[in-house]
Length: 229
Length: 242
Image (cartoon, rainbow over all chains, first blue to last red):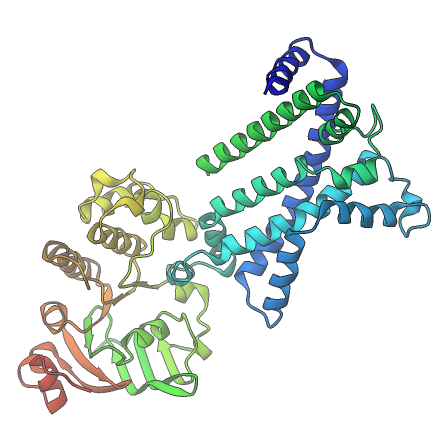
């Protein structure tokens, strides 16, 4: 318990003193997860909506694949991205390994099935009678789809919130493909692992508290957006 | 000379999973009339309304709407927008009463200015304009659905058991609004219901649907007092008819 209290005090001290290294780590964490979230939202929401609105013979297979994707172990994603981006891999020429680009790629792969799958579920949960009703009122196919999306908005925001929670807190993938290089690829989660290994529990707890506070603030912002939608 | 029918149905047939649920040889609907179609559950009433609203394609036969034959239920948007349905269960969007009522106007690119407020006053919901639509009672929600349909001034209003499960106050209010709108704007109304009394109160002409077939169609007075078919006579008396 004493460690937690000391960690909280240390977290407050680091923030109050404007610790440069800490703010660099926070900024990189937000940048990597923020860009990954943007990419997965921009692609995952439209695909999830399309899957939710249509029924094909492959529906069962697609759903099973998406749900499997939602449970992808980050470390496996990290390994896959590592192999793809390593010098001998197909994308080695990009030179992304041990850079934030590799971390964004890995986090996008983790977030995408979450956004797509949960959006699809939210769209499918909309009362089918709504589609018939808006068509009866003269909606075009596009207007009908939009009416469903608007109705499913709470679920769509929940999908984005879940994806953000999943990637801001994951460590396995960013550790593998980023390498935890100070000033270059060190983010909050990898810094926590490092400090724990070195026995710097107070600092590790402080970073953990800051990570939790960031996730809470981001979720609060998204939920406020949901409330206004 | 009678004006041309707004709907003309010829050999209209609908099947679901190989089972015929509707089979009407011929039916003409006159512009501006209130046509009441009664029948027990499963008679094909709701199926007929879905076809008349071009929400599904018929298995066979033709629908001619406003003089234009509609191929396979694929009505052009401008014709489709002349018809709307109020269903038995009001499906409202997660928005205010005002936003719900203005929805059809916005779909048509119109700004819902004073029309929505006037329509809300007409259905007795002016004070509820800014309330979430789904917080209202069943009767109030159905009045929102009715206002949403009427504000777009449809040429044809289709009503699918619009007052089932509502209290007498809301039933009376909704019937008065329908009657008033029909008289004021000449909107054609097709009401399907198993409620013989409601059909008798509202309809100019009435028909009996049974097993997907139109058994009888006549002026309301004749239909309810001296029906030609014994099945109509039995249904009007409140007996079970299959």
